[in-house]
Amino acid sequence: KHHLREVLLHYFIAKKSAVETNRLLVEIYGDHAPSNTTCKEWFRRFQNNDFGTEDREH
View 1 (tube, rainbow, N blue to C red):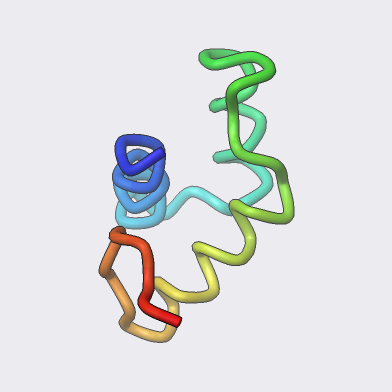
View 2: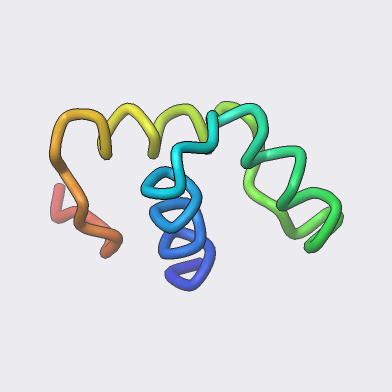
């Protein structure tokens, strides 16, 4: 889980879109890839300068 978040951050920094990132991850990880919605949520965090990839405290 944490590894995939770091991969999402990598693709964000590489200027990929959330949709493109999801497509790439599905090719690589298949059913274990994060959903398109999850990719978009993480990209929204990164766009707001929140680059932490750990679980948040509730």
